[in-house]
Length: 262
Ligand code: 13P
Image (cartoon, rainbow, N blue to C red; front, top):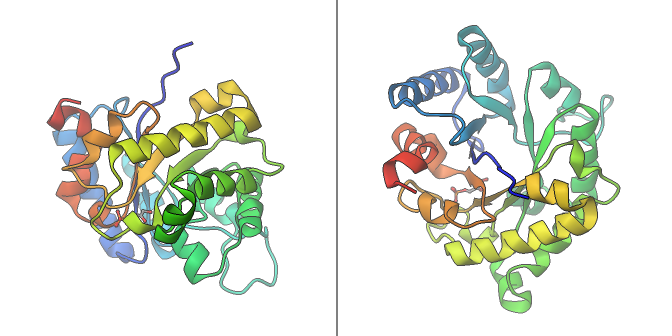
């Protein structure tokens, strides 16, 4: 059965751009894509701004009916209560977020998030109708010791324990050594791990879910290398960090099909 997965280009802004800068950026991105007559069937576009920007992005997107999705960079595993500094998935859903990033390596390493935390957050996202963009990836040490797929596959299994992946899921394979390093994985490496992740999805959730779930590559993605990743059969898009803050670069990544003839 041929399954079509709409490519997905997602910009993880990390802790960059305040709400005024966010409004300007999203407006210009929408203009740039409209000018270029971007067909959103070629690539769905989403941005992941800091929490303080999301209300402003929502207002702009809904007022101008922009075809740009957005989401949070994290959420609490709890729905409400005495959790100072945390943000409930209920609040993100109320702001019309479609997605939420979960388990980014910066959360795992800088904030000590465990596989169990990530699992609880995936469940929280589903409780609130949000689609997790679940990040998995190995460090340089893991790569040396276990090869590329072992750690991401183990993280995927742990994150999906007791989860109905059919409720909506995007997986982002982000090798930690490739993030912000300027040294992207090769397309062959990305494909190898994406295929392993898809096989595990099939085992856990069945062939249909595995065939329809988008698996992204992330780590030093640029306009110059995006096409090579998207040519791989199991890579369905990209989670872009640094290059998502540069309007021309990000807009060019979104239009990978046109400008490189992929
Ligand atoms: P860079 O694109 O800056 O390497 O970051 C990737 C990333 O962490 C996206 O979540």
